[in-house]
Image (tube, rainbow, N blue to C red; front, top):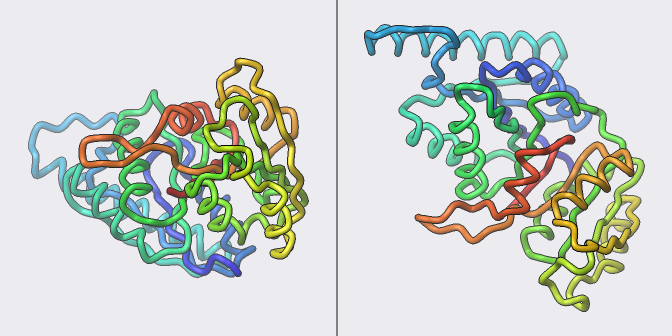
Length: 274
């Protein structure tokens, strides 16, 4: 089992080049084709234009340039690649991106950088994609922590359907790692102990060639995101796999407190499904 079709979100952020290189490296490992996707709505930085049609043309040109640069990088890396530009305003573009992502094995997004102009849009893309695409999302930090090839992963396991789906969606990556830690935080999970079935998960992953071990940690009154971040640091983790928590509806955002906190303070890539 491998990823054969990866969708990579490309924008004008400072982390863009590093993210592209990392994903091209992952694609070579998996034998995958990478499609670079960007939005024509992204206004180039430091541009002040009052005429709407002029600004639109500048945004379109910038989008084409991003895709041309991505294709050049893919060709240099020897990776099969395509490109696609999403048109429309912010809301329409994020919805179109989520719909377009449905026919890919994996979508790679970036963490929103709160100091950038498009931070709110990046956050909206993340929520819409997880809610509407039905596909796993690989979030990459906007600074550092791009250690690919990955060596060691941690699964934030609570036995929920979202966590279960994330684990199975991550199998193509997990199977190639040196070690996978299944982290269970005791005292905070709402899942009954008998429903966690951690030993069963270890056996299931072993059948897929994944070297997994269970680690149980008492919360000690500490919030779940803090426990997870501490364990990532203590165990030199390269990737966190977790479920996309929350109850989606037309009026309610999908991300629960744990998910939102980890995505805002992530120190390693996070793979998530809902």
